[in-house]
Image (cartoon, rainbow, N blue to C red; front, side, top):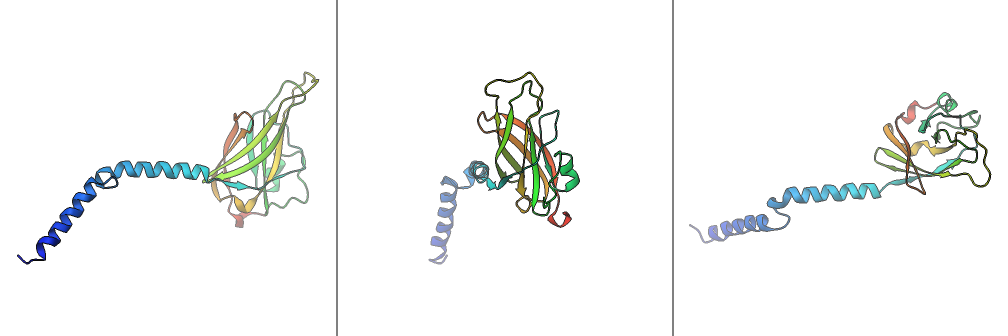
Length: 185
């Protein structure tokens, strides 16, 4: 046996022992992988991309149920709005509407506040405003619509969820298919 063979063999043995006994070694690899996956999930939730949500000067339709919807073309927007603005550029914008469903008195309203995108989920933060002052017993259908920059939305299936900013309560969610930018009018 040469003089260099023993130290090389000992070096390999010491490295193997060190790897097995270290916190990040093979014995703890599953735990480390789980911790890493958990950290990545937390990071991706906090890494949501804020999207520009622009007000839309158009009256939403009367929707009987709580819902959230997106429109990428004029015909689809016509099913969400009483009148689609003539100058609305669907190559640049998508329409998003949130509907609260029926309320038993007048005075209710809804304001879309912010939008954020995390992976394949679009979150809309909205503010449901309760009536103030005198109301009448009349069924109303509060809703609000806004514009999202079309280029910010990834093509493919997208989960869209709306929540109240004050109470944190869930309003509605849906799944939509965002068309490729080249498929837009």
